[in-house]
Length: 432
Ligand SMILES: NC(=O)C1=CN([C@@H]2O[C@H](COP(=O)(O)OP(=O)(O)OC[C@H]3O[C@@H](n4cnc5c(N)ncnc54)[C@H](OP(=O)(O)O)[C@@H]3O)[C@@H](O)[C@H]2O)C=CC1
Ligand SMILES: O=C(O)CCC(=O)C(=O)O
Ligand SMILES: [Mg+2]
Image 1 (cartoon, rainbow, N blue to C red):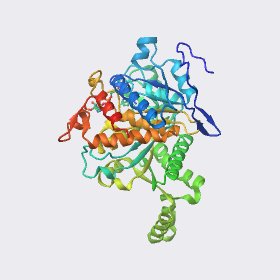
Image 2 (image 1 turned 30 degrees about the horizontal axis):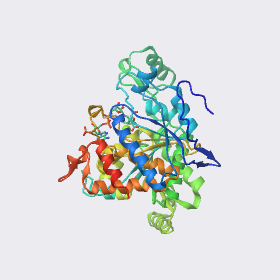
Image 3 (image 1 turned 90 degrees about the horizontal axis):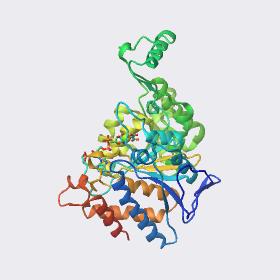
Image 4 (image 1 turned 60 degrees about the vertical axis):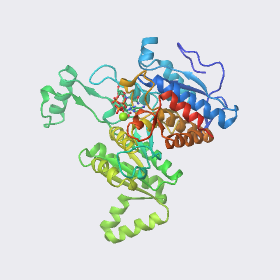
């Protein structure tokens, strides 16, 4: 039993454990949650009611989540004088599966991202964000239903690791001098007034991410995995990500995949027609296609040809941008769920793609859909598929009935705008 410094875990319930690589989930699992900053409390209150109602309805009282509140962000700071108390990490480690609301990160100074810190501390190396269209949701594109992608974003390294030094400090001067004097770097345009950031991208980090994406694609009968990178410019980080991804796919998955690296080799040896023939044959045989695209081209093609993309494997920063861009295509960040997962240990913390939306804090206004659908991912991860399906069906029905929060209502005709809490009530009423 883990030692908590200031928190007391619930007196009832049991731990989820990992046995022989699989989760073993008791009927009354203890699940730690962080309410979140800004709109987090409004959203969490609504979401928790939906999760409890779905579990109760699906299992007739036989199963129940025992919630354990843990703290991070402003509530943690005001309660314990710490932004990320050690007890919070202990709880997520101990109970394996957890869920969180958004946490504030100040821009240009102040604390480093608590979200990133949680992912790094718990080594949750996959940020998995499915993007699908719900019928009736207002969208800025003509065919939003063509978007059906699952983003696998590397979650532990890249420029997002936050290794950087501020302009004018002795540290940045040391780094710049090292780069200029030891490494022969001549390209820093304004060395006297530069801040410097470092972008670590490793073979190990890439391989575990791409492996998770391919495993997911094979298990779920998806057509392709696309490695999205900016490898033409950043050759040894983003370019290496692409090369390592292809190498891993061919080495570990052999005959089950066909890669564009293979295509290029066949083309060089036997011509484009032969390469196209082999690819067509591989696709007809149901092999998973592993391909790649440069990130800027990808961002225009998801608007012009979204049906060509399926599972996406990408680096941390690209994945951040891509998540919001794709969420917008299917109606916005109000229904964009996600999960941070370590597929090797089983640890997972589920969270929405959006942030704290601070201007709406305390107004009971924003869409709780992203956290609710993150909870759906959590229930599926736990194997509680019936409860998950109840929520998804209720979400589909409620949106079809045009009962929606402000974000959708402002773009729909004939919608009934409801508050965060009322949307949850409508969902619960539509569970059948
Ligand atoms: N994982 C996390 O905890 C994350 C935390 N953050 C943090 O959140 C803070 C605010 O970030 P910001 O860049 O403003 O991004 P946000 O995602 O918080 O908000 C941007 C805009 O998105 C819309 N939006 C966000 N959430 C919802 C929702 N639930 N329902 C409907 N619309 C929503 C609103 O649009 P509109 O104005 O059009 O109504 C809002 O103004 C920052 O401190 C940032 O670091 C950001 C992302 C992730
Ligand atoms: O940590 C943050 O404040 C922002 C994180 C973010 O935007 C994301 O993970 O999508
Ligand atoms: Mg983001």
